[in-house]
Length: 498
Image (cartoon, helix red, strand yellow):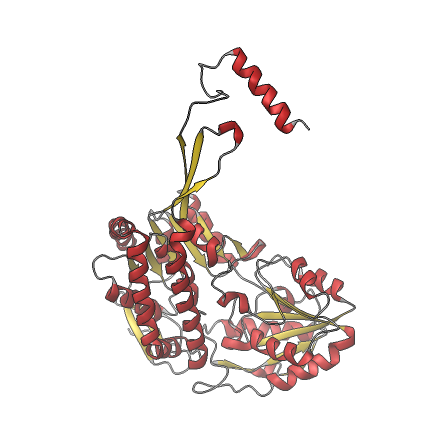
């Protein structure tokens, strides 16, 4: 009996994972489902390939990764079409996502040697006879479990940095976007045909669990906080280190001296790009009383102009069909808490689409404020001042990103946000800046991708000391004498006793 296909919902038939468009139901691809044994074999193959890859050195890896970057740039329209068909993302948004990913590949490839390569570290007086040396060695095989909402940018944020550090990578793409994941590993294989350095395994959640238990040397996960806990539990069985990017409920603060036109434009973009399906998307806004009404009017005017549909629209379909129920429930909860829909509302949910919705005066205990919505909705609440805004913004267990609009106090407000990242007078911009680390705190996870911290995340620090002279203050030896100990005590008192 043939399964009934719901557009966008992944289906397994005859050991094949079938991916379809959430907008049209058109098939995007079908891929063999990996068994637990298949996953282990993929990791074993990657381990051998990783030794070869690490042996190329920084220069060899840099040359190949830059060729991969060039290939993605040349085929950007082709990849954007795959992203569009499989996930429903508008072509323009897909191109922006791919451009950002290409930038990260370039930066990781060019900077890995500088950040991770062997270097001498200055010693201190007590061990002046030794020189210190530090390098970052690859873990071996890194498993990456990627999300569906940014199926290019997010897995590459881990994979590119892991590859640049000398690791092999096994990617488990989301079951909602396997075609994109396979496209990425196939394109890499074109420029690195010698060994299976970057490969993919496909399937549902059980395949991700198998990857956690497969013997990978580190695992990078992006997804919901609930699933992140399961990933950590599985990896804990073998003490496999993990990097976690969980959910988010990012807030924007609009201070009294903010440029309201710029704030409204950035708010609509930050909250509704990719149909609001963005982990660092703006979902909550706190505007101080003196600018609240004017700001809301400007947000509604801009959001109301957005187009919704399958082709050529600003907002595409909701990728995961079941997320429609979550979005509808949050809109209902916001209104039940005393909130008002000044744009959209319950009628905005028209599967597979959700039209822009702006909710005001929503109770802080409402699910619309406290839980991740992942739709083109915004809650905008009035606050007395920026201090109250910071308190409300920090009240949730999430702590991924955030945004502040203002002049005099903007920097100090951004520093007070309990988040891994913040942008001032913009939204989401820290994601595209390859020189900065990306990651959260609290329920939003731990560890960092991107930037120097992202490179170090995928290398093991290896410290080496080397004797270069006779010890003037011998201490770490049974050959020390009472006189040596007395001299050591005297030196410590002179150096540190003041």
